[in-house]
Image (cartoon, rainbow, N blue to C red; front, side, top):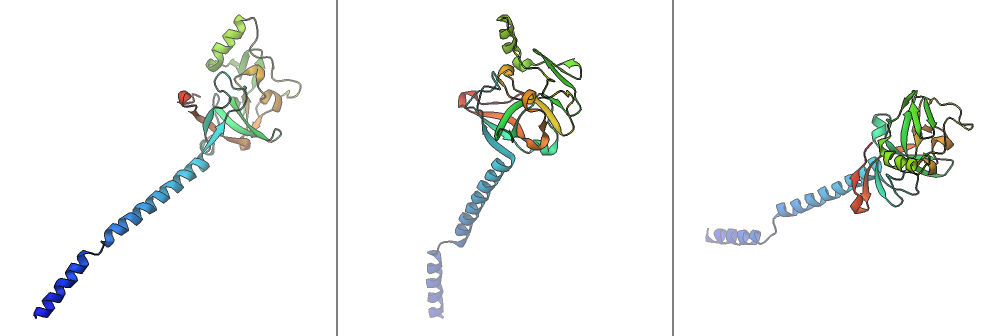
Length: 206
């Protein structure tokens, strides 16, 4: 009986020195959770939101070369683009992506004459370039020097499955006035956030 008791005591002391299995399991579970979280972040970043770098003056004064944007790629899988939204889209003929503002959508009739833009016969209140236009007018100049419809694109009605876009910098922008209506299938997504430079971080107003 005494031998049995002593043996039991030895076994108990040995078990006390063994690392608890529960602690090991918790570490493994935490590592799994971190790996899964990193994978999810990567998927969300590359499948739903994409970084984009502004290159060129076509969206001044609201966007500038070198600014980095977050583009929402999933929004237009849920609904179609709306007037006033800033979008990024592929331009196969140029072999690159453009950033422009949606002025008119499918079924709209659009006309650009000087600094007056009308959609379905009503002037568009373009508050986002008002200061720039006022500055040009004070200098005795038009802000825009390219009209629409024109000889290259005589039809002013936006066809189904397309949008009409223009750059905010009207006299220095290659947009629907030169390349025609943009197919929805070429749209990458909506520009939602400027995240670089840090001093310019803000949500984009549409």
